[in-house]
Amino acid sequence: MVQNSSRVASLRFVFVSACYSEAAAQAFVEAGVPHVVAVRNTTRVQDKAAHAFTRAFYLALAMGQTIKESFDIGVQAVATAPNLPQGEIESDKFLLLGPGAHDEELLPRDHPLWADLSLPAGEQGRNRRCLHLLWREHDKENGIDLEALGIDVTEDPHMADFVLVHWFDSLALEDGTLRPVSREEISAMLAECAKRELPMLVANPGERE
Image 1 (cartoon, rainbow, N blue to C red):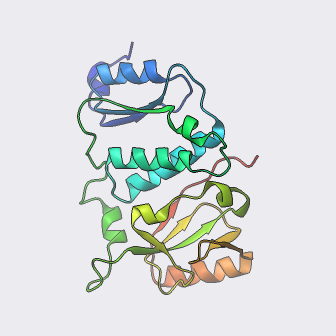
Image 2 (tube, rainbow, N blue to C red):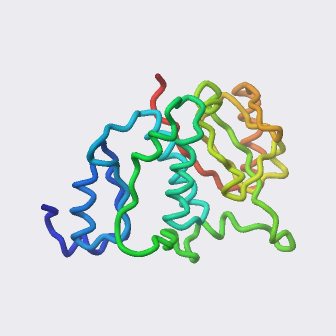
């Protein structure tokens, strides 16, 4: 039983981040939470699948996707992850529960993040561009599909609209490959970004294995 159901009902979203969590998620739904993500009661989800889903899901939410769109992006990230031979099976273990179409955006349009990520005047209509720093040994197998979020990668700090960080040993290139970078190079790039007062989104990839 979910205690303090009146307080729980004021929640808009719950992510029950655990294996076999469908029953717990259903309790939140019955208490009035409209959007709940969980894992099927009948199965255990792999850690790599959980990492891939969580990173893609929360980044999609941060970029203004609805809960349903973000959930679908997370599922797709698991299904297509190269380090998950049974990605399609793993992706089917995640559930989005609750009534309705889940077409709500968790970040309201007046949230300060939107002002930080808004495109310059006269450049509306193009994709946002990010300087993407990441962890080569992890992200070469667990990359997020930025294109699906309307984000282009740039190697030039002067062309970026924001900085996306998963780690600090590689830089994403425009051709889809990764290039190792030194601490000195990273410091220089971030210094340029700081001069332009670019916002930074940080999504940790999880523990090293």
